[in-house]
Image (cartoon, rainbow, N blue to C red; front, side, top):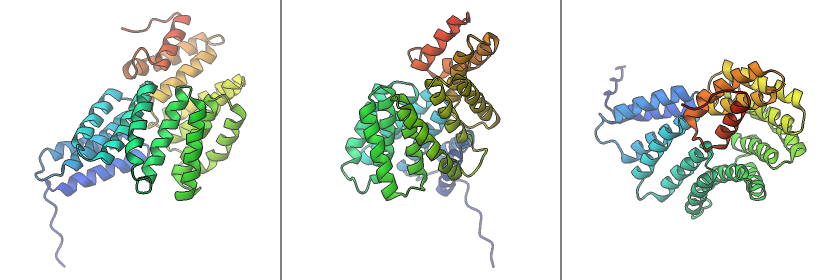
Length: 320
């Protein structure tokens, strides 16, 4: 048999393979590798003739999602805006990007903008509720989370319960989409002050969540550990909260891949619990947190303000 000739390095298939590899890396929790592959795809796309405009839009959309996972929100917005422009005339594709832009605004803690983008995306996707069912459920989940951050708990709970029911029907109760929605439900219940219900939901959905991750070292294991700790803190179980936050932080430090801003916020949360009992450790934790928060979040963001307030209480200097 004759060996297949290697592909021309400028063949568009190389771009598609890099994008597919980047998406796989992101789903495995490796945003850094995803970003590396996407940057290679972006550079190669500039040398490939006949590349579809939609392919460039996909690259920029994926770059936006990966930069979001790395806490580099402004770069994420830039790439998503380029993707949105590249999809001109393709309403549903633009709606998907709109939803991702909303997720960036949520990361920036600009919840009104996050809600507005999610609602705009839904208005388009709901024109074809059957064909867009999966995308609608994803955007509904994002919207529920943003609403809960904004304090609109009743609508948030209603929407996430709908997502849970519909994902069970269409994807199955063992699907990642269903179990992830339940994890978000536990977090929304916590923010709504329904702590017993939050604890019960988290206890029920954590085993299938970890099983679906399939790897005890997957960086996303950080999230249920931290959520359990914050439920303990809000319930007044401060020893358990401190222990849980220490565990979450140690896990994230040993298994890079979790959102660095989420890790910084966890360090701030633990620093707040240690401010009276161990000022030196609190300052060390908060110093590490502020290095990230000052780069990622505007000074008006809630988490940034809380960290700055705690720093002043501890006698630390913040800002430039």
